[in-house]
Figure 1: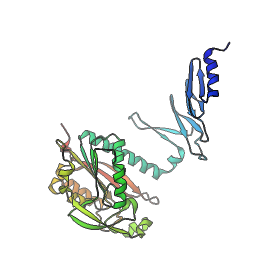
Figure 2: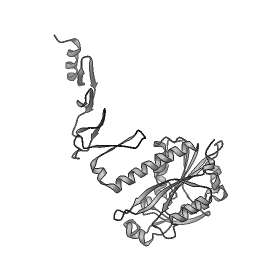
Figure 3: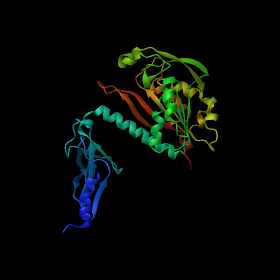
Figure 4: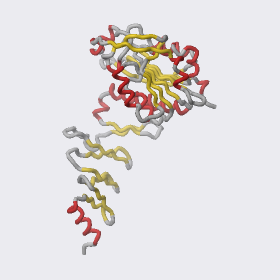
Length: 334
């Protein structure tokens, strides 16, 4: 004899309500879209929206399953094809699609970007950073990454090019602790020309022969007049209202980082840490090599905590640029 509960379950679809019966006394009821019950493993099921994009379930460890959904027509990894890689004794696991694992260079660079962001977030917390200077902000990628990794303090971003600044300004809307400025930083207060047709690689420096061979975008030669200011001249305004400022300096200015650093003058010692893109292979004429940059930072009391590849040559494996993360060890809180 059917119970009232079962009768109601059968009635609901006639009213436009979708039902997935999970067993005695248990059901999932939804207003829109059909749902399906997918067996994941012993004692575990997944209830998911059905449609043209199928779900694939793969076991990646004891009592652990990976559920994926691809775009229409995108091939799905077969069950069991995903690899679960243990990350040492950290307790973490990396789940890899075999296709991704086969792209050694792409995987390494993606992992380096994540590890760098994770490391920086930990340093900001350890050194109690309350103001990040984001120099060469472009459209705000770095600041958004900081927020995703949990940093909640002040961010001050500098981007001199008009098109990128418009996007940066929009990205910072709604974040009261993220301030943006439409100028660059350098050794002197001045006006300069910057190449603006190179997307995230815009620079005040011309490309080197190596850079032109590597990137076709350097063949374009559009320029824009921009304002440059010294870092020590904007620090007080940027940190206004912060009790006991503990700033961190991030620079990504396409070969111009040492000029930005020089503009800090004697106030460079106020930064508890810094992050600079240093080059082993010069993309820009007149840019410093990694050894020169690191030596200058070390001479001001900063020491390396991490080096993360930013770009690598596909043909040779050589690293072109590193993200170099440094701190002043004496600045670590008691």
